[in-house]
Structures are given as structure tokens and as C-alpha cells.
Length: 166
Image 1 (cartoon, rainbow, N blue to C red):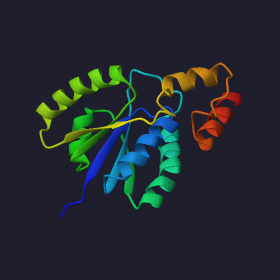
Image 2: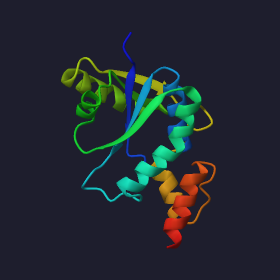
Image 3: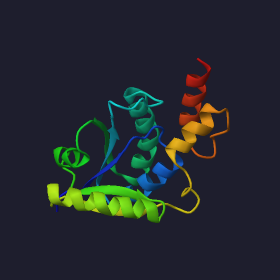
């Protein structure tokens, strides 16, 4: 039986408890999870690609270890479906928070299926406790001096604090 490998793409700027909820769920259904950090050259992220890479690795490694799931972190700046194919992924994991996410994700799945029919999109619903968390809102709260600890792992909060005070 072949190894089930899935790609979980996103900006992960920052990785949130919502992302980790999806990671936990994905690790229950795959043998290997590839976390793909999108790099958009036209956008200025809060955390550099290298910082996001380190944070993602640090907070996902314990989950992967606990579930016995192999994982790796990659960066990409091309089409996400090309990254899925390049990493040998046969599934693309997409987290859904609400109906708006679903409508957008269905369009993306259709496009990706046309480009790479062998890569299946798998939707995983967010848990109710983290459904409201969005990385863009976390950044905004942090920049404005609010407490982001209910929304991110401690390592991410610490990285924000360090970056905002330097």
C-alpha cells in the first residue's frame, strides 16, 4: 500500500491554533503531511519566510510526533497544485471555517482538478472553538497591542512580542 501524502498550503503568517486544529485532523488521515508556506513576492508578510518556516516546524513537530505522522515544511511561489505534484502529494488539505470558505475552495478545487486530476482536495472543518481565528485578524490584534495568546501557540506569541519590541 502506498503512503498517503497530503499538502496543506497557506501563508501561515502566523500559524494559528486554527491551523493546528487542521494539522491534528490531517495527521489522523495521512501518513505524511507537507506544510507548504506560500511566498507572494507582491505582499509584505509580518514574518519572513524563514521565520514562518521555523515557527511552523516548531509547533507542528510535536503533533506529528504524537500521531506518528511524517512531515516536512516547504516554501512555494508557484501554483499550489504544482507544489502538490512536486512533493508527491495525492491530496490537498483545505480547512473550512464557514460557507464563504467553502464557495471559494470549491472554485479552487475545480481549477486544481483540471490541472492535476490525480490530486484530490480534502476539506476538513474547523472545530467550533477555533473557527473564528484568521491569521490576518491575529496580525491586526497583535500590531494594535492586543493579547493574541488565545489564538496562537506560545512560540508564535513570543515571536510576535520579540518582533514588535525590537
